[in-house]
Image 1 (cartoon, rainbow, N blue to C red):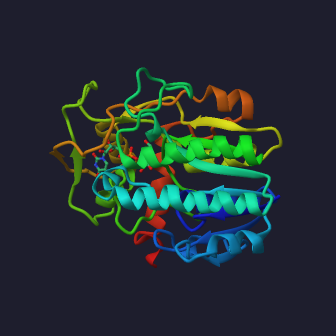
Image 2: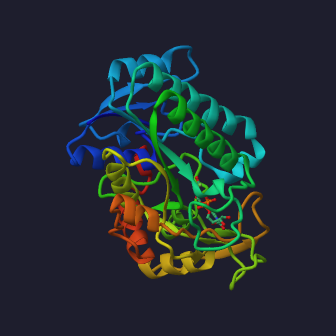
Length: 323
Ligand code: UFG
C-alpha cells in the first residue's frame, strides 16, 4: 500500500515507518520536526516537512502523497504536560487531527489508522483492561484523544472513512536503528537509562503512596516493534475499530528501575518525590481483541527484552539523534 505517516520522525512513527517499509509498503512521512528528528526518518521514505498550522498544508500533503491509508502518529504525548498546557493538547491532538481526517475524506483515502492511548480510560474499574471499559480520562491528553476517537466513529458512519484506532499502553524499547529521543525527556525508561549512561545523577519516582503493592504506579510496557506490527496487521482489509495494545503485565516504577539496574549493571539512585498530576495508579491491557481479530502476537513481551533493546540503542546513541 501507499501510506502517509504523520509523525514519522518521532519515536513510534519512526519505527513504524521502518517496519512498514520492511513489509513492502511505500511510505511518505509528514512531520514538522518539533518533536521528531530528521535523521529518525528511514531514508527509504519520502519526506514532507509539514506545517500543520498553515492553512491548506495538511490537505496539500495528502493530495501530493495520494495515500491508500493514513497512519496518524503526530501528536503531543505527555500526560504531565497536558495538565499544565491543555490548549496545546486540544489543538495538536484534536484540531490538527480533524484537519487530517477532513483531508482524508476530501482525497478519498480508504483507511485512517489512529494512535490512541490507554489514557482515554482514566483509572479503570478493573485490570486487565478490555476495550469496552468506560472511558473517563483524567488528563487533557486522554480527553483530546478520546474526542478524536469519537470523530472517527462519526466519519466512518457518515463519510465511510474506515478507521482503526490503537490504544497504546506504554511504548518502550527500540529497533536496531531507531529509538526514543525526546528533546525534553519525561518518560520513565529513557530517564532511568540516562542515569545508567552517567548523564543524570538520579531518577525521580513520582509518588510512592499509590494503592499498589510498592506504592508506585504500574504500567504495561509494550515493545515498539510489536506496536509497529499491529499497525501493519491493521492495514489488512476488513480490520476496523478499537484495539488495546499491551502485554497484559504490569510493572511498577520501582520494578522498572530494578530491571534497568539488572540490564545495565549500574546502580541507579532514585529519589522519591510527590505524585505527578494526571497519573492513574495502574494501567494494564487485555489485548485479546488484537490477538484474535488481527492475529497480533507480540515478539518481545518480556520487560527484560524491552529494556535490553532500549539500552542497546541508548549505548549506541548516547546523545540520541543529536550526534
Ligand atoms: N515516572 C517516574 N519518574 C520519571 C518518569 C516517569 O516516576 O522520571 C513515572 C510516572 O509518574 C508514571 C510512570 O513512571 O507513573 C510512567 O510514566 P511515563 O511518563 O513513562 O509514561 P506515562 O504512563 O505517563 O505515559 C505514557 C505516554 C503516553 C501514553 C501512556 C499510556 O507518554 O503518551 O504512556 O499509559 F498515553
